[in-house]
Image (cartoon, rainbow, N blue to C red):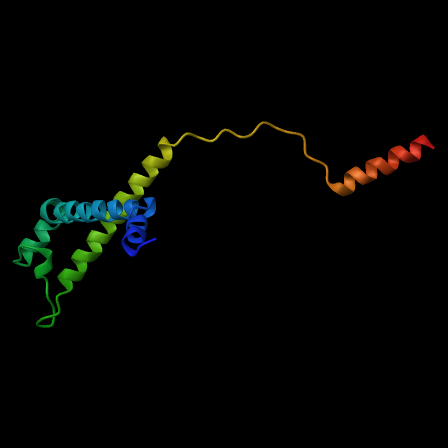
Length: 127
């Protein structure tokens, strides 16, 4: 098998394609979350605090003359929102999954020792 045919077989495996799709969707989802934070959350929730600090975005928060802790707070807020949204998505998916029905009660299969004991008892009763 040639090098390129091996590569083609590797690249077209289901797991590789699924992973690629997941990465692309993850990147798009990240942009959505970033936009949600910057354009919805920050103006609604943080607007009064930012106005009091004379800032327009949370990223502009600094301390001690240059420590940009606003970027850190923005990243933490971004993480919390992503984690919460993923939690809601997984919770929704799990609720949509068909509930597995319990298997009907089947009699327990006796172990080898139990079977041998039963055979021994039957042989004793015959004598």
